[in-house]
Length: 345
Length: 255
Image (cartoon, rainbow over all chains, first blue to last red; front, side):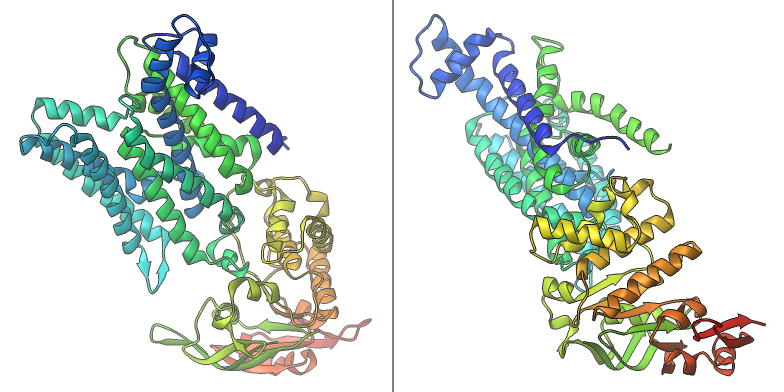
């Protein structure tokens, strides 16, 4: 049998990868900083008194632009990967995606309402605009997921097969509504809408970062407490309940964490696909399906992978910038196909 | 002790199980027999709390089954369903280790128990293999090891419910599996087992419950239940019943 990576080596490797990604993400961009200067400027930023030529400017770039962007990337990547693990556990299918419960399409609908509606009413004050967009996307994601969950419930039990189908139906419905808004939009609004749908870490600011960081930390601390129960759930719902797992409670928690996590991620950075699908899969290939390893490792892998994708987005067409959703889909879709074909043998 | 009183289960308008009064006694292997659709799996689902009784009740240690806290119930009652679907590449010992979830016995004790359960179900040689790479019969034995680990070593006050645990096994493993289950009961656990093979039931069970169309047709020792007339009436099968030349239990031969 294929030997797996020991959990300890996996965590060491992924942490190193994460640190490398953070370093590069801080250093590279339209104004590339020498790698060593980046370190010194980062130390200055956290209060170590280092003097040097150009360090003040570097500290400014780091503090105002690169650091919030890097933190955003870490949080979005980590929480999307965690949500992927949660959904693959809930549906007991390694090919499930966070989008299945309607959270992404709901967020897209919320964003479309904010963007098109906002411009139709003459535009809201500029300071208020971005927050309204994030809030609408978050509420849209949460609302559609709540509806999908509600539709899946019968006699106090949640039927995940019904949830899956309800998710597909509501996703189609939300997409048609987004299409309607797209049709109604004028050219400038259309551009905003399109770019938002492709996702970007551009324009990260601390004020929009906090809610996402809090949600990510909460989900990342909560889900590992359910690692054993998630393992048991993979045996089947009735098997898990015979092992003493509160299956209904667990399913509710998984849906809630996903709605919250993906909702916050999409609200902060737009639609970024494939991370939630591909990352848990990669980690499983390396270290096996045990959730006690899979959950924390997916956070690290998702964070690192998203930062590298963002680096490609920043550097591929520099000084112009690609939407990151294009990069993740371009890399993720072929990998997904590879998994499908590999599974046939 | 797990017991039912005047248990009735309805699915829609149809009564699929009626008036079943039964206790699964410590140290005893109770076999459940009956044609397809007689209500065997329905009975098992009711006994483990998956189906709520429409009348009557199911109790575990004098407390209604649905009053039990999940993990405490799981320390006393383990269930092996007919088939399990697991689509993830857990290693064999990890699957068996899931049986220890309701317990807080610590890593070292759990490892000992997993080892013992793997041996009991004769799957020790599969240690380290991926569950997905196993054959149907091997998977079935791994799941048996899992439920054995859940109640290991098996003692008075614990109940094991098994739904056709030998359906996919070769002849040798049908016997080794039932011997392991028998040993479990001999240590004090109560076992209820659904079987289709009348000869296996005759050999390894202390009592047999014969179900027909959701009703108890007979509940007694194997010699009393495995009578040609009764089997003809319930299964529609003409049989000869003779004592086993060496062990003395009834042997059923189709005519």
